[in-house]
Image 1 (cartoon, rainbow, N blue to C red):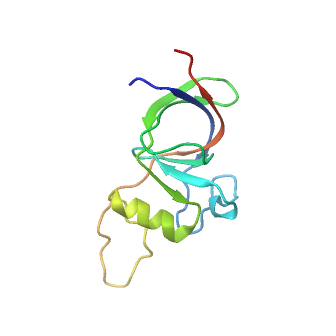
Image 2: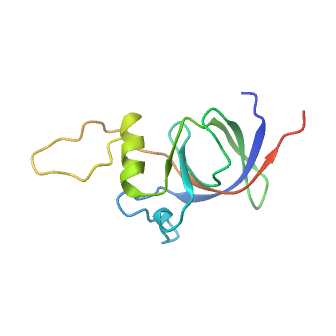
Image 3: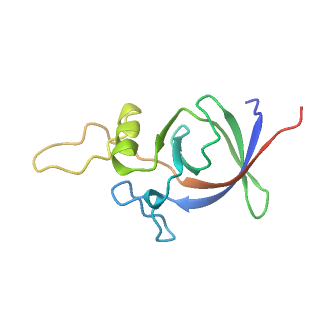
Amino acid sequence: METSLTAAVLSIGKVNIQTGKTKYDWSVYDSSATIYYAGGMLLYGSSQLKIGDRLTLRNNDSNRLITHCEIIDSAPANKEAVIEMLLKHKYDYRPARPFKKKEFSKKLQTSYSIKGIKQNEE
């Protein structure tokens, strides 16, 4: 995958979509950041990305390559907007209802917090 941007990221684990809590016990809903959906994972942070951007994700501390991905969708960092965005991509994180089965059973992978983005040199 040809990428034009490199993002320095830190793993925040699997985010609890109902509360926004990460493995570090802070909530992604506590700020005005943007949440991006990138094929099975969420990226949290910078609002300078747009749908269609291709990224190389690298660990912020060690610069180790994590993966390559493409931004598929985005939503403001609030619970309702994130649930709606995920529902469009067949992830059902709506609250459970008595006697009602979830529409989709897919679960998200590890999510990442974006610490910085730089343009790759051609």
